[in-house]
Length: 202
Image (tube, rainbow, N blue to C red; front, side, top):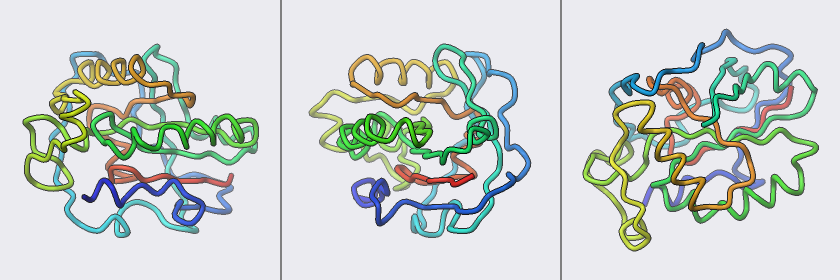
């Protein structure tokens, strides 16, 4: 399955963007969205993960996102302390992400003082009933059925937050989780992929 082969959180497969004294203009999202803000239409992404997102040497855009409590993450502000930033995309319905949480926790616990590590919550990789954006058809996955991780693709920002809340209740995740905006701004620029990661050197 694509989700199984696209987790890039290893030393050999992380995308690294070196030497970024500046950022491109912000992709948003601006003020914190309202819970009833509708999620924009999610296009299918059926191409290779290697063709998506940013690459070594690219300058990435600034962005801001929020966590469940309304705390804001600004990439520019995070980079201001001079530390590298590790961004890891995620969704609860991606069983590969769930299987790698222990590794992410180890990274956070071991390197959290040297690297700013954030999880960015994006579109559901394997939503229940709905079409998977990475397959073009419904692909819930046996792991999700067995583990009861059955969530439809959220239709509002509040629904996405509710899935994140369930994930944080049911899993021990050490890194802070920030939620992509209703129009999936981060996913559209830094993805689209179910489990990519970027190590950004300021």
